[in-house]
Amino acid sequence: MEDDSRDEEQAGSTGFKVKDRRRFDDQGNLRDSGAPAEPQRVAPQSPKASQRPQTQPRPQTQPQSEETKDFVVRDGSSDDSEDEGFSFTSFVLSIATQALVQLGEMDPPPGVSIPKSPEGAKHMIDTLAMLSEKTRGNLSPSEAQLLEEMLHSLRLSYVRQIG
Image (cartoon, rainbow, N blue to C red; front, side, top):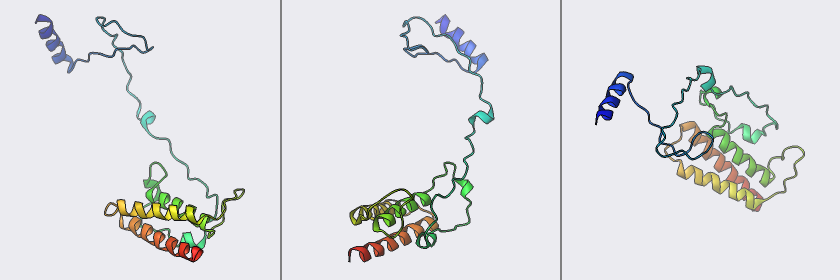
């Protein structure tokens, strides 16, 4: 009981008490169950260490076709707002580009031979349709418009190819 009251007094003066209950030490060795762990002091990180590195814009490897240029929707937000450099819009455009290449509507990247594959294109279109259904109501107006217009265009291209 005296130990508890002494611990509470010490905790009151420092704010809180931390007791290390981990079973293993830093080297991965099993600790004795009765031996207290060594207190470790951790220096606070500087603000610069916790910041993410700046991402550089990637150069465009392939010029956009006229068809995909029509689907780039400008909603007034800058590209710098995306921390990871990968947005919902770029994800949709990536899947749509794969479908266009598989339909033969767009040339594959230089040095890569991708045969026409209506089945693969249908899978990409179905993926976008599923994405549209599952994200309904959770997209910005520009994202929803991009997704719907892209789906419409891809479905027409698919029907043209197989019909």
